Length: 230
Image 1: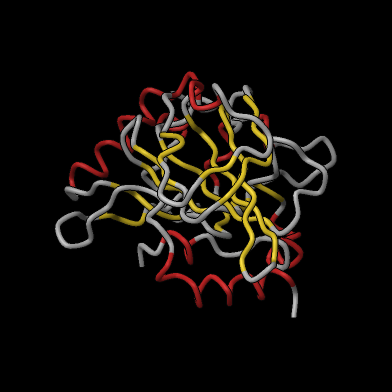
Image 2: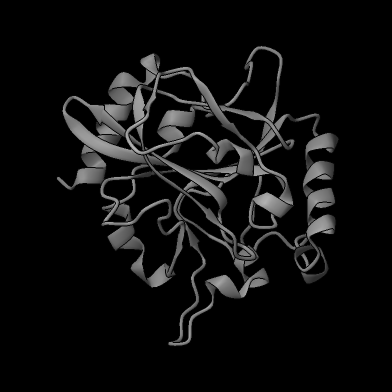
């Protein structure tokens, strides 16, 4: 059994104890699934090349369905990353496979710690298409250590943080950033789980090569198990 499978099983076992990552009332609020693969023919080059138009595209999708959030992305092969050279490669295959789960919504939507944690690291990854403001938390579940990454945040969320800082379950510690602070994306949270930070600080791959999918399935647990939208 690989590590990601073990964590997936532990997440299922403990899911009733997790605090919601975002504010969402299933009794009266709605979410939709957003598709960023080649199957989505409405996601044209004109939309992707203009951040403002892309923001309007997401807002319109949510408004038409009266949805608070748009969800999706775990191990999804996305054409959307063609909008940024950050995901290209000089050696051939570009990065297009998304490892986390995205929650698309309004800027400044609040984000909470789903369980007790401590700050592992944080950074402002300020490239077009990158994470922008990013926080990584460290967790322990049944003595197994794993990590959660929160990308595309407000830059002010990094103020006052320090390595090892305790973050209690249910604490609102960050929020959805605006495009100028979140890598120039429509407001959303990239939420991802990792087994090992591999020496990285405030950053970890969130988009990788499709040909390496089986490798990453062994390293990246399913963040849907924490978010629990479906």
